[in-house]
Amino acid sequence: MNIENAQVQMRKGILEFCILHIISRGEVYASDMLDELTSARIMVVEGTLYPLLTRLKNAGLLDYKWVESTSGPPRKYYLLTDLGRSSLDALNETWQELSDSVNHIIGRTEQHRKPANGVTADVPNNPTDSSANA
Picture 1 (cartoon, one colour):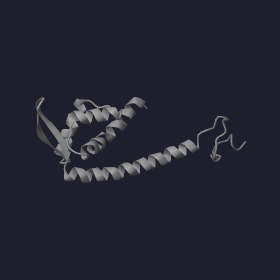
Picture 2 (cartoon, helix red, strand yellow; picture 1 turned 60 degrees about the vertical axis):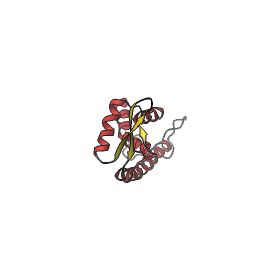
Picture 3 (cartoon, helix red, strand yellow; picture 1 turned 45 degrees about the vertical axis):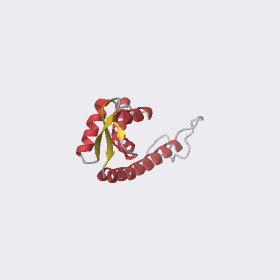
Picture 4 (cartoon, one colour; picture 1 turned 180 degrees about the vertical axis):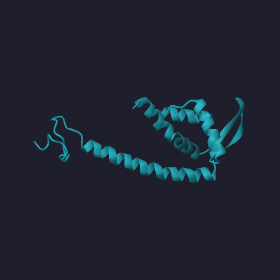
């Protein structure tokens, strides 16, 4: 297993969810999204963000509006559509279920780790293990 690849895939898997959350707070400029994602240690570059925003817009989850800027060209601000809000609600439910499930599994794993003395706590003997029956 390539750990680095798995980490990248995990981040990619939640990127849309995080973007929808950021936009759900109100109209937002793409560079502000990049800043927040970066500060949250979800590394993303413009070359990843803009195609994703286009895909979300084409799916009807978000829209944008142009706002004139006093310091340069007009800026594109993104906002959620009604479909985007209902999709985010569904993703929130899924995230909570996944989070609870993963935390449950991690918690059980931590309970079964060997303590420093090498004795495994709360692990039943494995009947197929010949050394356990000796």
